[in-house]
Image 1 (cartoon, rainbow, N blue to C red):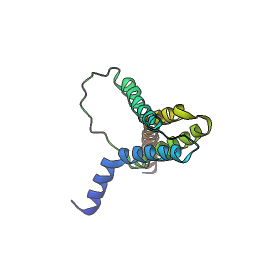
Image 2 (image 1 turned 90 degrees about the vertical axis):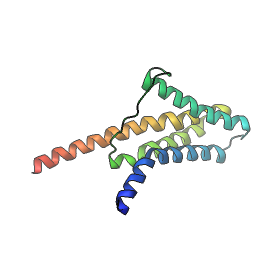
Image 3 (image 1 turned 90 degrees about the horizontal axis):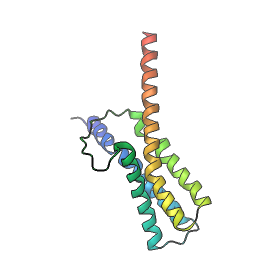
Image 4 (image 1 turned 135 degrees about the vertical axis):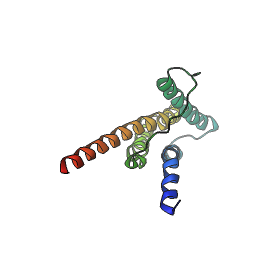
Length: 144
């Protein structure tokens, strides 16, 4: 395996985790640097919100919480790995929430946002990437 193959393998495996990490850290930083009273409870509200966001996504995706699943080996389109919409969009929404929410509500809602919105935006990025791939194949077919 050459250097470029290893790099492709690494960034493909890390893609979603890096975007989510950026989103969670940046959303938390917005709360820490805002005009909020930081306490153990507010931090727990942020974490609780993120977990509730995953719970809602799991119920939507699997329709039941005790379902057994076998993960698919999904294909990944390179442009969808950048997470411009998922990471930056979710953090921007968190920024907007810091302007209109306060107290524990802000921490909880921004925690939910970090998980829920990031994953919804990932779906949009995947859809957009597949659309671009389809358009590229149609253009290549028309040109040749």
